[in-house]
Length: 206
Image (cartoon, rainbow, N blue to C red; front, top):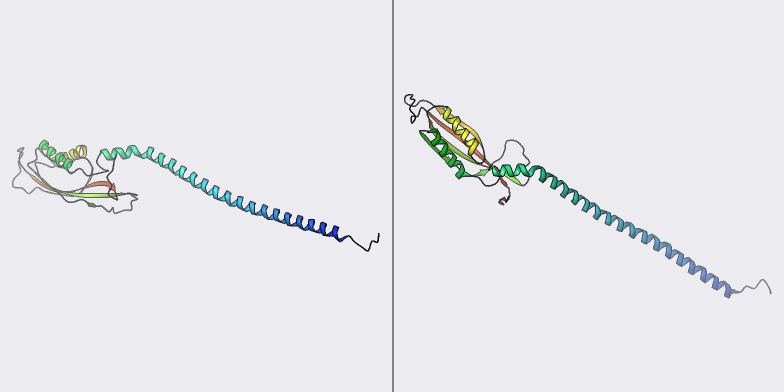
C-alpha cells in the first residue's frame, strides 16, 4: 500500500469524534462555571435570609430582656398615676380631705386644660409624650406649717407626679390669732401635674 494515500474516511471519523469531544468538554466546563455561579448566588441569598432571621431573633431576645428589666418599674409608675390617664378627681379629693384634716380656713383651686409639656432639656421619649396640667391653689392658713402638711398629704395620697412651680405668701391679714378657724397667712401656689401617655393617643392597657 502506498503511504502517499491516506484513508480520509478514518480521518473524518476521528476528526468528528475529536470535535464532538471538544464541544462536550467545553459544554461541561461552561456548565460547571454556571452551576458554581448559581450555587454562589444561592449561598449569598440563603446567608442573607439566615442573617436577617438571626438579627430578628436577637432583637426579640433583647426586647424580652428589656421588658423583664423595666416592666416592674412601668407597672409601678402606672399604678402611681404617672403613666396613663391623669387623675384629676383624685387630686381634688386629696386636696379636700387634706384641707379638712388640717382645718384650713379657706382652700380654692383651679385646674387648666392638659397640654403637651416640652422639657427644657433633651429627652428621648420614644413612643411616649409628656403632658402637663397646671393647678392654681389659693389658701388661707393659720401658719406656715399648714402648707407643708398639705404638700405632705399630696405626696402620700395623690396619684401622679407634680412640681411646685411658684408659691407666694402674704401674712398681711388683719391681726394675728391662734384661733383654729382663723386665717393669718394667704398662700397662692401654681402646681404642675405631669402625665406620660402614648404620643399617638392610644390608651394604655396594662
